Image (tube, rainbow, N blue to C red; front, side):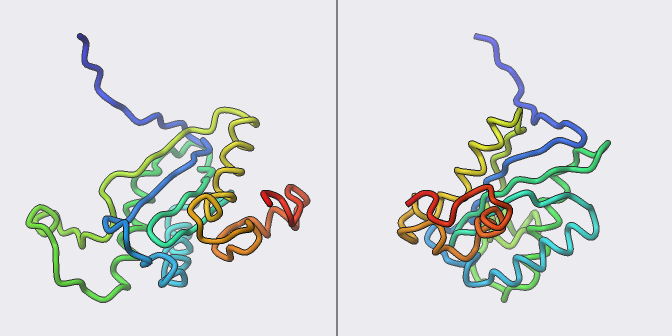
Length: 167
Protein backbone atom coordinates (compact mmCIF):
# COMPACT_ATOMS: atom_id res chain seq x y z
CA UNK A 1 0.00 0.00 0.00
CA UNK A 2 1.42 3.37 -1.01
CA UNK A 3 1.55 6.07 1.58
CA UNK A 4 1.06 9.59 0.36
CA UNK A 5 2.21 12.57 2.33
CA UNK A 6 -0.68 14.86 3.15
CA UNK A 7 -0.11 18.34 1.80
CA UNK A 8 -2.36 21.31 2.22
CA UNK A 9 -3.64 22.79 -0.98
CA UNK A 10 -2.49 26.35 -1.17
CA UNK A 11 -3.72 28.57 -3.93
CA UNK A 12 -2.64 32.22 -3.98
CA UNK A 13 -5.73 34.42 -3.90
CA UNK A 14 -7.82 31.36 -3.01
CA UNK A 15 -11.03 31.28 -1.03
CA UNK A 16 -10.93 28.86 1.91
CA UNK A 17 -13.43 27.41 4.35
CA UNK A 18 -11.98 26.74 7.83
CA UNK A 19 -13.06 24.97 10.99
CA UNK A 20 -11.01 25.86 14.05
CA UNK A 21 -11.65 24.18 17.41
CA UNK A 22 -10.70 24.75 21.03
CA UNK A 23 -8.79 22.05 22.87
CA UNK A 24 -11.58 21.89 25.47
CA UNK A 25 -14.71 20.98 23.53
CA UNK A 26 -16.88 21.65 26.60
CA UNK A 27 -15.71 25.27 26.83
CA UNK A 28 -17.64 28.41 25.90
CA UNK A 29 -14.43 30.42 25.66
CA UNK A 30 -15.09 31.79 22.17
CA UNK A 31 -18.58 33.18 22.77
CA UNK A 32 -17.65 34.29 26.31
CA UNK A 33 -14.76 36.27 24.81
CA UNK A 34 -16.16 37.16 21.40
CA UNK A 35 -14.88 40.76 21.57
CA UNK A 36 -11.32 39.51 22.14
CA UNK A 37 -11.78 37.15 19.20
CA UNK A 38 -13.05 39.99 16.99
CA UNK A 39 -10.04 42.06 17.98
CA UNK A 40 -7.71 39.17 17.11
CA UNK A 41 -9.36 38.94 13.68
CA UNK A 42 -8.97 42.69 13.13
CA UNK A 43 -5.32 42.67 14.19
CA UNK A 44 -4.58 39.68 11.96
CA UNK A 45 -6.30 41.31 8.99
CA UNK A 46 -4.31 44.51 9.57
CA UNK A 47 -0.99 42.63 9.75
CA UNK A 48 -1.71 40.11 6.98
CA UNK A 49 -4.74 41.17 4.93
CA UNK A 50 -7.53 38.84 3.88
CA UNK A 51 -11.26 39.20 3.29
CA UNK A 52 -13.54 37.61 5.87
CA UNK A 53 -16.32 36.39 3.58
CA UNK A 54 -18.47 34.70 6.24
CA UNK A 55 -18.18 33.44 9.79
CA UNK A 56 -19.95 31.86 12.71
CA UNK A 57 -18.56 31.67 16.23
CA UNK A 58 -19.87 28.92 18.49
CA UNK A 59 -18.86 28.33 22.11
CA UNK A 60 -15.93 25.98 21.35
CA UNK A 61 -15.34 26.23 17.60
CA UNK A 62 -15.73 28.53 14.66
CA UNK A 63 -16.24 28.26 10.93
CA UNK A 64 -15.28 30.91 8.45
CA UNK A 65 -14.52 31.62 4.83
CA UNK A 66 -11.50 33.72 3.93
CA UNK A 67 -10.42 35.11 0.57
CA UNK A 68 -6.67 35.62 0.43
CA UNK A 69 -4.95 38.39 -1.52
CA UNK A 70 -3.65 37.68 -5.00
CA UNK A 71 -0.19 36.07 -4.86
CA UNK A 72 -0.65 35.05 -1.22
CA UNK A 73 -1.55 31.59 0.07
CA UNK A 74 -0.18 31.81 3.61
CA UNK A 75 -3.26 31.08 5.69
CA UNK A 76 -1.30 28.97 8.25
CA UNK A 77 0.65 32.02 9.38
CA UNK A 78 -2.55 34.03 9.66
CA UNK A 79 -4.16 31.35 11.85
CA UNK A 80 -1.05 31.19 14.02
CA UNK A 81 -1.14 34.97 14.46
CA UNK A 82 -4.88 35.01 15.16
CA UNK A 83 -4.81 32.16 17.67
CA UNK A 84 -1.84 33.69 19.48
CA UNK A 85 -3.46 37.13 19.54
CA UNK A 86 -6.63 35.73 21.07
CA UNK A 87 -4.79 33.52 23.56
CA UNK A 88 -2.48 36.29 24.81
CA UNK A 89 -5.45 38.42 25.87
CA UNK A 90 -6.99 35.69 28.05
CA UNK A 91 -6.05 35.04 31.67
CA UNK A 92 -3.40 32.34 32.12
CA UNK A 93 -4.76 28.88 32.75
CA UNK A 94 -2.98 26.64 35.20
CA UNK A 95 -2.92 23.37 33.30
CA UNK A 96 -0.85 22.66 30.19
CA UNK A 97 0.56 19.43 28.92
CA UNK A 98 4.37 19.17 28.94
CA UNK A 99 4.29 19.01 25.14
CA UNK A 100 2.38 22.28 24.88
CA UNK A 101 4.60 23.95 27.46
CA UNK A 102 7.72 22.89 25.53
CA UNK A 103 6.30 24.46 22.35
CA UNK A 104 5.21 27.62 24.17
CA UNK A 105 1.53 26.85 23.59
CA UNK A 106 -1.20 27.83 26.03
CA UNK A 107 -3.31 24.78 25.31
CA UNK A 108 -6.39 26.77 24.31
CA UNK A 109 -6.64 25.66 20.68
CA UNK A 110 -6.41 22.32 18.98
CA UNK A 111 -3.15 22.35 17.06
CA UNK A 112 -4.76 21.40 13.80
CA UNK A 113 -7.66 22.94 11.94
CA UNK A 114 -9.63 21.89 8.92
CA UNK A 115 -9.34 23.83 5.68
CA UNK A 116 -11.01 23.41 2.33
CA UNK A 117 -10.27 25.30 -0.88
CA UNK A 118 -13.62 26.51 -2.20
CA UNK A 119 -13.79 25.19 -5.75
CA UNK A 120 -16.70 26.99 -7.37
CA UNK A 121 -19.91 28.95 -6.84
CA UNK A 122 -21.90 25.85 -5.81
CA UNK A 123 -19.24 24.91 -3.26
CA UNK A 124 -19.32 28.48 -1.89
CA UNK A 125 -23.11 28.40 -1.47
CA UNK A 126 -22.92 25.03 0.28
CA UNK A 127 -20.34 26.34 2.76
CA UNK A 128 -22.24 29.59 3.37
CA UNK A 129 -25.33 27.55 4.24
CA UNK A 130 -23.29 25.24 6.48
CA UNK A 131 -21.77 28.18 8.37
CA UNK A 132 -25.03 29.99 8.91
CA UNK A 133 -27.08 26.93 9.88
CA UNK A 134 -24.44 25.61 12.32
CA UNK A 135 -25.89 27.18 15.52
CA UNK A 136 -29.22 25.47 14.81
CA UNK A 137 -27.47 22.18 14.03
CA UNK A 138 -25.74 22.30 17.42
CA UNK A 139 -28.98 23.15 19.27
CA UNK A 140 -27.86 26.62 20.35
CA UNK A 141 -30.89 28.35 18.81
CA UNK A 142 -34.06 27.27 17.04
CA UNK A 143 -33.79 29.81 14.22
CA UNK A 144 -30.71 30.92 12.31
CA UNK A 145 -31.58 34.58 12.79
CA UNK A 146 -31.40 34.22 16.59
CA UNK A 147 -27.63 33.57 16.69
CA UNK A 148 -25.77 36.86 16.98
CA UNK A 149 -22.23 35.56 16.43
CA UNK A 150 -22.66 35.04 12.70
CA UNK A 151 -22.45 36.86 9.40
CA UNK A 152 -26.02 35.72 8.64
CA UNK A 153 -27.62 39.16 9.12
CA UNK A 154 -25.03 40.73 6.81
CA UNK A 155 -26.12 38.25 4.13
CA UNK A 156 -29.81 38.99 4.82
CA UNK A 157 -29.02 42.68 4.28
CA UNK A 158 -27.46 41.85 0.92
CA UNK A 159 -30.54 39.86 -0.13
CA UNK A 160 -28.73 36.53 -0.18
CA UNK A 161 -30.95 35.02 2.53
CA UNK A 162 -34.47 35.76 3.72
CA UNK A 163 -34.67 36.47 7.45
CA UNK A 164 -36.61 33.23 7.94
CA UNK A 165 -34.10 31.09 6.01
CA UNK A 166 -33.45 27.76 7.70
CA UNK A 167 -36.65 27.78 9.80
